[in-house]
Figure 1 (tube, rainbow, N blue to C red):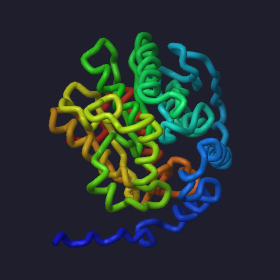
Figure 2: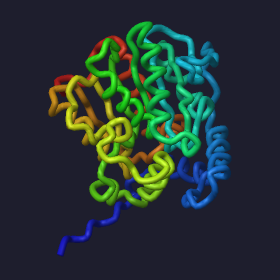
Figure 3: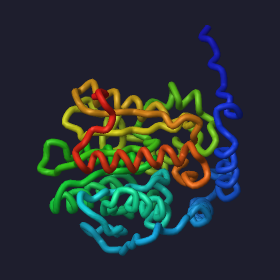
Length: 313
């Protein structure tokens, strides 16, 4: 008989400030909300995003325009462009959901940030979101080098686009994947150990996958699950960040390990004591603030073709 894995002690892993963030989030989008209709879920998600919005830093401006036929929000700044893909399980979010996060990335890095309003499921099942992400990246890359950044579902899109465009004329200086879902095995590792973590449960991930694909998940589709690729060579420098208390935590480490094994530059780090979606806590939780500062510093380094992680390949 296999030994039973001890349940994680979230009371000790998660500090008081992060618990405050979790309670504030749950007031808008409580656990178990996947049982509600998508209309209600989207309304609650949008209200939650509004409640956490911090406004723009001084001097930051943005305008909306279509790129490759896809609605985008562009924060003015220097080249190379940072292409940002928002999270939301491929079901939620848009130009406003991560608006202030992207404004702060622009302020911290001085770079142009382009937020992609990719199509959502179930109205537009896979590969619609991937197609939009690929189209915007290709159009911007025709003007010069780009950086790809995404959180959660957006991290999936960033990685999938990198796999699709490697060995092409497109220059991707680097990718930063923030608590990404990359198609790991949901029957093992963090998917089991953190199956009932605050903010995101493994059952929520399975629900999102069913909606994204309108049925069974495809097997071997790299554009949906980058971890299912058999070749991880030729990919750009990568930072993959896992939240410690998150079912998706192992995906970041597995992906970085696969890139390193193929001779690439990839660094994985775990944001200790943090939960899925912690970017919204960057103003109130010191751990989240430190991780966000690391994200912005890495974007700046990658944009300058620098590798900021020492001897780590």
